[in-house]
Amino acid sequence: MALNKKMYIGGALVDGQAVLDVTNPATEEVVGTVAAAGFDDVEKALQAANAAAKSWAATPVAERQAWMLKLRDAVIENEDYLRDCIHQEMAKPWGGTQEDFDLLERALKFYAEEIQRVSDETLRDREGTHDHRIVYESVGVSVAYLAWNFPLLNLAYKIAPAMAAGSPIILRPSAATPISAYAVGELCHKIGLPAGVVNILTTDGYAPSDALAASTIPGLITLIGSTNTGKHLMKVGATSIKKYSMELGGNAPVLVFNDADLDLAADIVTTVKFNNAGQICVTPNRVFVERGVYDAFMEKVLTRTKAVKVGFDRDADLLTGPMIDARAWARVKGLIDDAVAKGAVLRAGGDRPEGLEKGHFLAPTVLDGVTPEMEIYQNEIFGPVVSLIPFDDRDTILDRANEGDEGGLSSYIFTADLALAERLAKGLRYGEIQINGVKYDIYLPHGGIGQSGIGHDCSRLALNDYLVVKRISRGLN
Image (cartoon, rainbow, N blue to C red; front, side):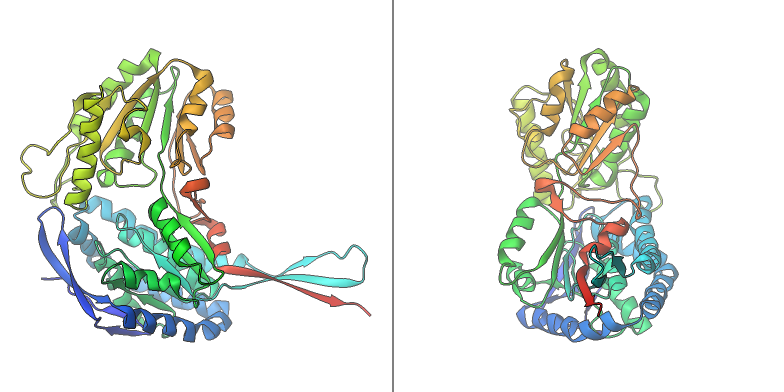
């Protein structure tokens, strides 16, 4: 059955000024058609959110919590349906849809609880002439631009802290994967969420999408996307002073030393790299391996790579699905070909997997001997490619890991020397340093440094983006 969806604006499910087909990248067949917003629809959403801003911010925390938990109950009741929406719209392996789903229901619960910990603070007056309070209030309307790679997880990162903070939100999912987000809109409608608190729409082209950021109504623009998109939205949004919270990806380095647990490192590198076809902002990109264990580590990576199962079958235990579209496939294939032309050795993959003639599948790939002259070294790959780079000099490896303009989000260190790991962790210019393991969860801050973004998703810190600070001082007579 086709997954045809309407937008959710002002508490109602509505048609848009256009419709968009959504294509499964594994079958290359249309799986649904969604309503898409033009300029008039965008304005309706902005006005609906703005109309709800004062009342939602004034709604008691306990009442906002109740709505969040009511939505969470509806999400849990519709688990199979929501996961199938993801499975169909982006051909994510069925097991991979669990993470998307889990983060949505957990985020709603986490922020419903976490908002209780936000309270007024008292400041001591040094002269004893006044008393002072710090008060946290809603930022007003938020606009969230969502990446396509984790349709519900990315939505969860935005909708939950916004609802908790009393900020009406307009969620703009990618036109590549809007179906599961629209399904959440259906659930908001079903539970009778107050009008304008949540609005969900994708747009027919970039101009209406830009109109959301260009409006003077939003107090916050938040994004999960590329650095270039972040720069663009900040430029477009300069019609008024706004807050920004942006997770913009990066070029994650991995540092594997001679004394590392090579099995652990190979497990993490290949699992994180090939999950979601490598289309993850925190996935390892440049894997620097100390010369003494380079060959041994490469063999372990190759063994795991060749065992990875690729495809689109709900009943199969698969790790890797397709790239999101033909353009993404061609871009990553071009990075591979450029590397090989400049001297890298292709050890595995590099092209379409055998037996998968249809769909945008790219075989899990390993490149040996990647160098800075290659495009794949300088750019975020966002595909299922492990780039192996030998190194000899520990004194310069920190500079190599930090070089480039697109770093700043995640990095990985594998060594038994904890003093070395701590020294490197202090020097790495990345928002997240993973030492001898990898861990992400809703209660752990997720954010980058520099060109990888500002603000945070997850944790108590995310609430700060949806709140503003007010100081109230009273003279003592």
